[in-house]
Length: 221
Image (cartoon, rainbow, N blue to C red; front, side, top):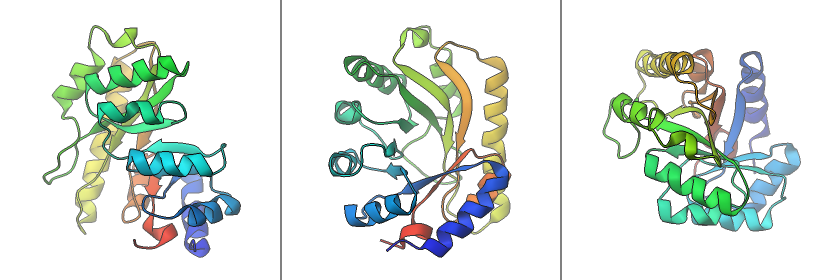
């Protein structure tokens, strides 16, 4: 069952910030997702391609699917026919593959570049030098079947709210700097994806346009 009370609290909190909610549905069964859909949610985030594809096949076709977990190039083809947005782009090679598969499906796939902002070890995410290398790549504008919409980041897993706020603030400032300095036909600076169940309030206050919330709505897995 979904926690409707928590969902209502989150939704009301986000309204003044105009921050949208992505319900993170990973590992939860389709029956729970259907309940969430029936309650009014239709923007779902999944971490793994195989699970996402399986759910998309049986759930309503007007659901907006977001991939928020790490994506391997060889799995892009499975989600290219229907994925709405990929939050976790961390290389130019991956952008090229997304573009190739989107072209096959006559689509434009929305992408976010994942930036490493946490003060802890992690496998994925671009540092600023790598990020700029993608955004200034001479072949970027040739990718006509992708559109970069903004940035995604995950804060440090800590109880130190000041640390979390600092990381989110830094991502927002980076976003604004890039939006003023980099203009290309397949870049539209509109989205900052940051904030989860434990820190969505801080994220919204710091300018997040979309938060990724799972356990507050669906319970722990």
